[in-house]
Length: 213
Length: 291
Image 1 (cartoon, rainbow over the protein chains, first blue to last red):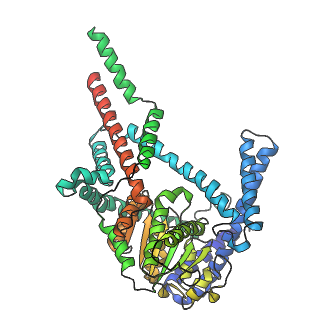
Image 2 (image 1 turned 45 degrees about the vertical axis):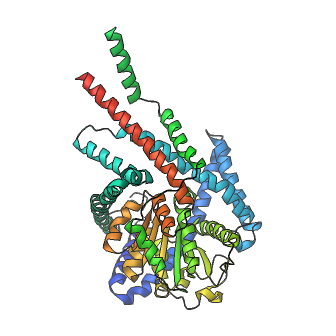
Image 3 (image 1 turned 120 degrees about the horizontal axis):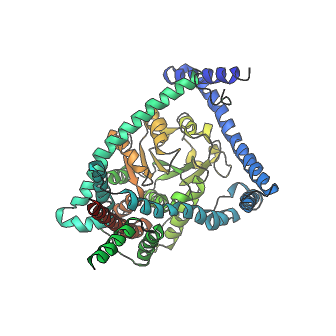
């Protein structure tokens, strides 16, 4: 039963959603399943919170390596939750001027943006090491990267303005044609893979979500 | 003497090939931060994909309803926040009604940040400009969990995904939402996206199923994957990264943050190109020595 019930549910919901796309009267069932999905998605938030507290709490209790960071995580979570729920004007907690907004702008935003900004340095370092003209394909990649890096910033326009913005137009051509063709091929491949995986899950051939049985 | 010189030259090229990445980090840090202290006026043409976004909004008559979905977090703020501010400037300048929503939890508050900035600008302007009123000129529906299911359900009825706005006011009590039932009552959808769920889901579930008109602003990493949708007409236009945002500001004749940040980006790109050239010279020199 533990294995069969999830498989039957998955097959039933999956087949209904496919049929509903083509036969409109099945939309009543589709809407019902989507309502259930909304409820499950909302409960997933509580699952995430519980997991966060359990994992970091355990780390703090057992004084495992890096436990002070677990304390920071839980404290940060508690501060934002308490301030947002009780000290920020109720449902208007996201409006400018509230303590929650202040913490978001002055703590969460700078930290989050900084983490993402680090990528710029690693991209530069990786580009230096990876873009070597070792063979024909690598040389073509290198040239394309060069044209795009220069052509898609104003400096490219300055360099080639006297040539009718040749660099910029070349960069746009690379984006519009070779790049788009490659993207389209990847998207079609991914779509076929998604159809295949979805069918395997619906037909019960893929069972990793049932505790790997 | 010649052997010593050759050993020294060999060491230099080997050192360049295995340069400490912290040296590269320092150069990049200087390249990005120093230009921020200079004010420059940049010229760049507006590309067709960005012009498509501008024309889509400019062509809407006053009073048209625009749905803007904020699907990004502070990590993508440098690229997408200037676009959000420009979209608001454009919409309010043309007296369009704006319905804000988010598929990411941080989305609605990102919208509030952009609105706060734009409203302060409007108040500081010398001409008496009407500041948009909540509930009449714009509304923030907030965040709903559910990803693409939210997009699909809104195609039938907004109230199925958003029974109330972000402040808890039922949609039936908001003047702007009177007569807005689903996508048929919205003239344009604008999506600001940094990942999943994002523009791809809006194309698959809103454009392909309900045939809405959609324009997007994406991060530079995500924008290339939207070009197939622009070519097929599923996307009317796309702003790609900071350059797209800068072009849009120039099209609006309102240069702002994105234009000022482009100088930093340009210098950083040049520095990376120089490093790549140096690396390849070192690579070929070493290869020649070995043969």
